[in-house]
Length: 312
Image 1 (tube, helix red, strand yellow):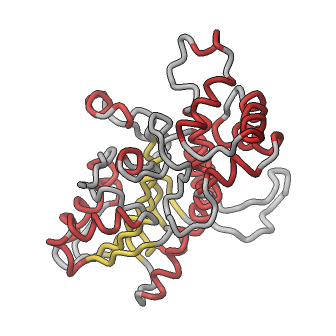
Image 2: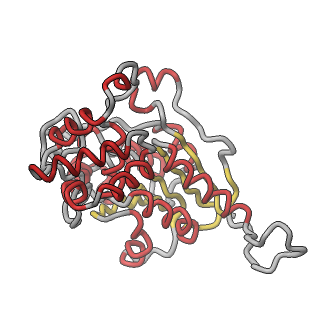
């Protein structure tokens, strides 16, 4: 079965990386290799791409799709948060650009069988890396009502977090929740009927998003990496991110601002005591968005936000 994924804002993202021949770049989220393929074309001759993905399906797909560039690419099954260790293993001190596409792929929704979609009846897994220990099933069947409600509010701003959590606990006391359809039905039954009409999204959308984020520790990983990435860039190197919801975009935006500001002393201090200096230049004062044409062709791209910084 072919790996299906539509890369978002490919030209804009790769343009922002300022790819140059002979340099070293990182695609921290290979997915369907749309961005990786463009990067490799632009860094020839002599350039190197380090392609990382925590989903082995994406790595296997990359081995096929990127065969013409096999002498110029290192494929790594890992999480991008471990980039420093990966570079050390490759004996690379720093790179010239890093790209993160923080969305999940159509392949994970349609072909993975891991319960990412509330429209399918699959095991309630949601692990991007199947070697990870915690699944969505573990979370919905183990957390108490208060913890579940907090998770839904924190990770997706779910308005009906408390009644949904209450219904989940009630239902799992009768029968453990093991499938995506089972969970979706429970969530739908917990949302007041009159509130379902006129909704732009399926009632289970935010709960599934919150669980996926928790299972894969997406926000914690992004926060850690956003601060650390600049240390792995050469001078003039760029770090670009494509985020798909406000929680991700907020983390990236605030991290980039801190790195550009440098000093973290309180505003009422007469002089700087922390000694931190400005490390980057923000290239996107306002996040870039996909064109109307791209949104029409790929509606899933509509919430994408592209941000980038350049190391001084």
